[in-house]
Structures are given as structure tokens and as C-alpha cells.
Length: 277
Length: 277
Picture (cartoon, each protein chain N blue to C red):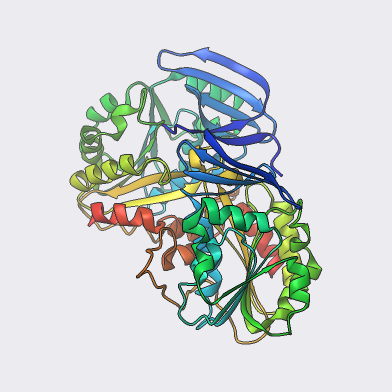
């Protein structure tokens, strides 16, 4: 996915190595980023910077609609997104569909501060294929769907394609929102261009691209597609909810960085605006 | 400066290796980032992402004051900041003081699109020590000083210390502005904390921290201190100038990303706000 460059973390100790039905799973203790989860050789999260990804992928969509009640997480087996969704007292039901049970087990064992998301009583875990799960969901079920996937090579490939977006749109209520991991503006503008074009066809509400900094992801940034279905208008750029920090202070997200995440460098803005207008 | 991690670019060909009076200088052709300038083993710029750094370090300060006329660049021997300063028709005089002539020569030879900044007739080059140069400047000379330095280890060490900031403040007119390279919020919060505290003591106008994404810098981000001297108030967060793109379109900067650059993740905001208030 990013030829010609590499980012390396010093390994203090390998804590786990396994091969699931879907991918290679590894956990190691790094010198300076805490414990690190690696899937098929790609860093998925580190204790030091997971806050940026988990808080942004969750609160960008959930702060953009009033009183989210039913939320679905596709992927996100580590539980970090669940942890963030659980901050909303308005939420009544949190479904998660993760394909790889080994990711869940490994997270519970090695990343208790991330997997703590599973302890919320509103969470129902479904181990299985996210696409199949979504197809079986009655139309209009969810207020928000969060797609916390790995890259579009390997088990997550389908999650970047048009039929998948259509299935997500069907599962959302009118004016419901989706947030999906959408690669790096520095490395993958061609992929992003396609994702934006696909979303523009499927989602008849609002279609936006946002980004944030995650040092251990390639090029140090990761982006998100934020879309809404036809119905009550959603202004993603201006958050309407505040977040419960009483049990666990936010480390990264705040309402200013929410708005700022939608401001794109000129080279990316040109391409994305051309596809969204 | 960043133990426990490394970012590697694939080297296609080494184009230059030399040892100046101050540092090791290297240029190589990378596989995916174009030509790369390396000083003492640290990537300074790549053709692919230099726009982010050069445009932000220049336009954050120069778009924050009306009609900048006299501008001083400390460091910045590659010429990229000059190229960006030259976009302002209001600017009458651009001084640059770079300590290492080899950096200038190498940039002119290998990075013509960066070193093009030297061709502007308003530019006067001073090869020498930035601190000594500033001390000799009559008080109140400049509207803006841009400190485009390497890290606070090696020849640039002094440029992060209080006496240097005092000298910069003296060289600025009332309500003049300085922008200085200020490390990574992910890696160097302790250094940033000190820089902010120093600036708060010296600069009696406004003191702000901004950041942007540069994939080839450690952790993928770089920050800037933006300060103004006592005098006409400067609101750094709301740019007052537009930029001439007729000869060369901006690749990164725009007025939205200017404002967004001042929005900090919560973990950084907490530390920096505590020092600036």
C-alpha cells in the first residue's frame, strides 16, 4: 500500500504471534509507543496514539447528529471504537460485527484499556462477515454506522466498494450517518477519489472527507469519509453534542479539532471537491 | 530526537554527499518522494512534501498581518521559504541569514524548484550566524521573522533558547510577528512546553502554537510557534491576506487550513494552554 517507504518501531519483546483464518496477528512491546497490534504486517494500533484514531472515527459521526441511539460498528475488533461510543448516554444499542475472533481475544488479553469497550452492557458482539451482517439488517435500523476497517487489501477489500456503501445506506435511518476509514491524502488520493465518487452516488445527504494525525500510520495521517443519507440535513463540520469525560478524559478529540479535521490541504481539496460537487 | 522509531525512504541513487563546516549534507533520489535533502542524517525536505512545510511556515505569519514589507528568514538555506515570501507584492525587502553555504549550493544544484526563491530581486543573502546577524539589526526593523531551523541539537541549538527569542523580539517592529519551527506534539511536548514558556515571557503580544502534517518528518507532524510583539494586536487564527497564485499555485496552504492549524489535540492543548494563559 505504500511502496518506497517504511516506518519502524523498535521491538522490545514479541508478546503474541498467531495466524487466524483471515490474517497474521502479532502483538509486541515497543520501546516508545507501548504495546502494538499488527495485522498482516501493518500496524493497527499502539497504546500511545490509538486515541487519535478511535476518538476521531467515533466522535466525528456521533457528535454530528443529535441523540444517537442505535450504532453499528463494522470491524473495530479491538474494542476502542466501542469504548468511545459508550460515552454517549443517548445510545441504547451498540452492535459490533468483527470478522476475526482472534483480534478480539488478543485485544482483551493485551490491550485492556482498549477492549474495555466490550464491557458496556449495551454492546452486542457478532463475530462474522460485516457485509453479510449488514444485508440482514432491516432497512433504517441505525442512526450511525462506523466502519473501522483495515486497508482495502485483504479481508477488508469489499468495505471500500459501492455495493457495500449501498448496504450501509439501507441500514441507516433517513439522515443517519456513516464514518469509514478512508486512507491517507498523501499516499492514496487515487483510492480516495474513487471512494468519494462511490459515496457521492450512494449517499444523498452530505458527503465529506476529514483527516487526522496518527504517527504510526503510513505518512502519519488517516482520513475518514463522513456521509449521511437522505433525510434531516447533517452538518458534519459543526458538532452538536458534547462528550462525557467524567470516567475517562478525552485524550485527542475536542470540538475545535472536529471542525478542523474537515479543512483539507489544497492538493487534496481540489480532487475531493471536484468529486463531491 | 526520536528514539525507538525510524522512517525510511528507499534510496534509488545517492546524488551528493559532503561535509560542511557545520554538518553532513546528503542528497538522494528516493523511490517515491522525489529528491531528498538530509542534514546530519535527518530528512530536511523532499520534493513531494516540501510544500506543506514551506507554505505553512511562511503563510501562517505573513497572512496574519496586513501588508508585510520587511521579512527576515533565519536558516531556510534551501530557499523554499524565500519562494513563498516572494508571493507577497507588499514585501519590499527579504533578508536571509543561513549559516551553511553548502546547503544553499546543494539546493541550487539539486532542488531548483525550491532554490528558485533566491531569484527574487528583493532577496539579500547573508551567509553567517543567525544569532549574530540579528544582534546587529537595528531595533524594530522587520515586520516578520521566520526561523526555519533544524532541530535543537547541532547548529540550531541556540535558536530555541530565550536570549535568541529576545533578539528576535528586538528586531521586530511593534506588532511584528515571528514564526519558528517548533517540533512535534507527538514526540516533543517537553521541548514545546519550554519553548512556549520562553515565548510567553518574551513576546508581549500574542503567543500561539500551530501544527501541520509533513509525512517525512518524525511522527508525521511539525509545529510552529507564532508570536507577536507588543503593539497592534495580531489575530493569528484569522488570515487577513490572500496569496498570489498566478505564477505558482499553492499546493498545500489555504485560509481554512491556516485557521485549522491552530486547533490542537486535547493532550497538547492542555499543556500549551497552561503555558500561554
